[in-house]
Length: 282
Image (cartoon, rainbow, N blue to C red; front, side, top):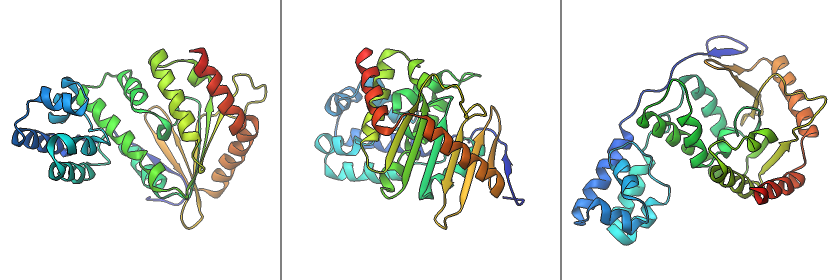
């Protein structure tokens, strides 16, 4: 990383890649070969015309189940082509360069902890929530930039499926759910997603109650990862910068804080009860 100890990582957003446009062009060719209009394809797949149009123009990331849905409409060969082309989509597109170092560590971690007091942790964000928080970014993003970020965030989440033996622990401030970013429907989708993710044996989600007299999370979010060789690393992020933390003393401090936060937060079971109550109150 350039020096021993903690490393500051500065940088802007990743440049837009051509992978989404390649996928969109492939879909258009397959649609043309099948003699279908965008409207007909959209109807057959169960998506809106606007959605299909954006995919073909390379400004929207294709849904994960698109190849399966396309098999009945475009045929098995087209479905296989779409599946393979989707796999080639650039995973780094839309990731801030300052985050890429941690993204690699995150992907290979055997244990991963995250405490968030700003937004719901990225690995737990459903697509509508990802989209709405990026639509609120300042300076405003153009649509293609938003789609790049949505795509990158969804691709990060593949680690939850690819690493069933990795333990994921998440602590989320209750007020992040009560804020209802994006409105009631987005919040409902978010809570449903959290409940579904929490059913997995390797994922533990805890909510930090809104009232906590001796709260130890005032310094901000905490990310910790145990690597395959059982070394621990930390990560912190500010407005326009981030820090990869490898110094043993600093990592130990973050671990101590995370353990205390975990003891202060609701248990996994109590969290499920609270989420179900909040879901019912919407």
